Figure 1: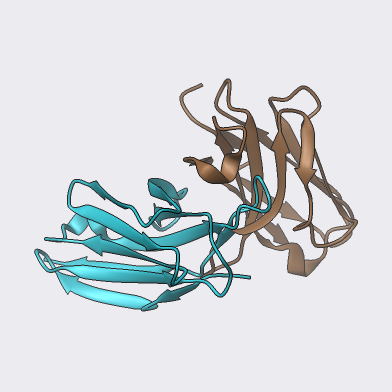
Figure 2: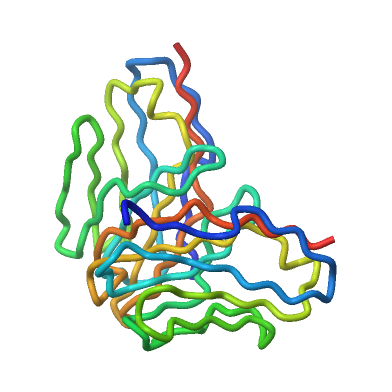
Length: 111
Length: 116
């Protein structure tokens, strides 16, 4: 079952914050986040394992609520380089390798 | 190598032709994945290898799709009798973790397949 991401698109000014959500109807074991710029490969941002942890990477952090089967990606003080499409990938723990990705959230940061 | 490489980067095939797409993962990476990405959508899982063993091929759309990784490194995705709906970007990713879904996946640049 494909996770659902929201919103589908966000437009920000430099320095503004954004939150991207990823929800699943199935129990999750892990959630991972990637950013893909147009015509390029997805680049790994972070992975969260079940346990409700929160992780941070500079001004990008994420949380994982396993009870709600949701993850959120927080981008603070956005920079122009944050523009791209953000995908969440989920793994249910019942299958060692299969990751299911959402359809992405397109983030545009303007000067 | 420095990263995951894929070849060719672009492939145009006439309907009915067979194609072979190659993936060179990062040296030492145990897990290897193939994804299909349609325009405006997220990567869709095709198949997964742990070393040379194909542990999951549930995402392959039909029996025209076949993937192999005979020596546990380079992988080839073969599509027989291509059809227009096969047009997409095919992404390969590798991971150090044997349980690939639980760790960082490094993606290659993809092969853009256009079937005319």
